[in-house]
Structure formats: structure tokens, C-alpha cells
Image (cartoon, rainbow, N blue to C red; front, side, top):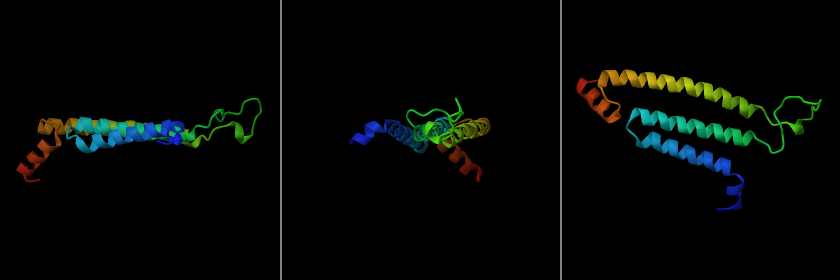
Length: 124
């Protein structure tokens, strides 16, 4: 472990969270757990973008006291991307949960392996 890991600990935590979410998405067969894994991955990406957009000793890009020099402000693009991503993530999570409810009502299980077996029995 080099010194850059301790300087960039936020990015390292984001990558660790992304790995946890991705592993959860791949290894779990329960649909709710897969949705949670996807949400962990989303959160990791937002953390990574927030870490990359932050610059020490700079403030939000709101002109205060007439200072218009760009060296005093952070870049607003990563913050906007994070806010947009959160809105999209909530919508996708709501859609996934509603589809999960429909699947549960039809197959009476949330296990993807069980749903697959029932689909093969039905001939679909």
C-alpha cells in the first residue's frame, strides 16, 4: 500500500463499496438482495464523483463578495451529475421493486433459480 491510498481514501472506499455491491449483485439469487447490491453500486459511484469534484479550500460556485475568479470555486458538474444520478436511481429502484412485487405475486418466491425452474415448467 502506497502513500496515495491514504491520500485518496475516499476513492478507495468508493471502489470497495462498488466491489461489494457488484459481488452482491452477482452472487445473490434473491431479487431484493440484488436490488440492494445495485443501490450500493450507485452509492459508490456518487461517492466517487463527489470525491473527484471536491477541491480543498474552495467553495460552491455561488458568486460571493464579487469574487469571479475560477480558482475560488469548485467544478459544479460532478455535483449536478450526482443529483441527476440520485433521481434516476430512485426511479430505477422503484421500477425494480414494483417488478419484484409482480414476480412475487405470480411465482410466490423471490429466488431467481426457483422462478427459472417454474418458467421452464411452463415452457416459456
